[in-house]
Image (cartoon, rainbow, N blue to C red; front, side, top):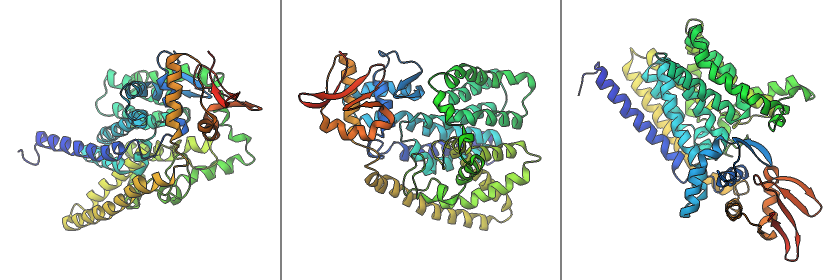
Length: 466
């Protein structure tokens, strides 16, 4: 064992602490992955059905299932879902595993970014907070493409910190570009955040093409799809000027993301957010306040503090421009931002009490006790109460329809599905899958083929073209 000032010993302790934090993060992200939420949401089912048609269906990176959805998550889920079909293991676990692994990777990326901005202590604190946020638990357990964005963005920014190198700058820019390509609302936030990060890190002009060049190329490649292709309907959604009172609506939605009801209450449905489970625990409030105060105090002379404030100000932007109310999914980049802010506040408080070790130790113990009690309450609410109450939102029927579609796609032949199974399911699934209804006929698009829900001698059935 080395002395306290030994950098080798300090590095070893940091690695052990990070490993412990990652273990803590893995438990709420991997445990009961197939049963909390209790079944697949329709959007998750669409992702799983698409993935099971790869690569034979030759779907492009941005493909179609009723609506048009970017395929980053679909390709990541494909190997696990193919294995699940071959072995008979859980469809829900296989579909959600990329999100869970991305959630754990976000904790590691938060450590790397925090260390680059303020040292290993800030990195460890940021990783711990991100690991404990219910906001992170939930979106690490849903097979949705937006769940990949925080990890891609934070990892990209982390690569820009520290000693610059050509490889790190290029890789960081590519990750930020991939984050924008993965989820359209992120395209409203990533460009200004990347510019703010570049300014805060004081990169030289000759390096700007290495870092921002890959992201710019991705945006140029996405432009035809976004403006004139299948993504154009998502651009239309940003048209806040079509609202009767656009500025008032924008301000209300934007400010709603900082309201206690949105962050701590868990009292209303907010973009896939779990009912009755606060996104942020109350025990973090003093750390968030301390972080804001310290960042405001330092922002004029410390550009890293200014970057943190800009990030906090930007994270509701995508949801405020495209939604009529706060949306936890579209504002998901607030998750690492709040983690870094709380870590910043913890560091500020620790330094302020450096001359009072007893008081510092007492406050730390009190915070740990209060936080432990609330984390246990939140865990019970999420893993016990929430699955029981959300059965109407996550339907068991999703699993059967996904397997049925996959089997028909594998055989390449026409088949049918009884109305008793399909009728009620389509009423839930129509927003994601149904494209039109003509009398007694439903037309739905589970990928490159078209399926018809129509009458037959046996009653209404789901048929595919032979």
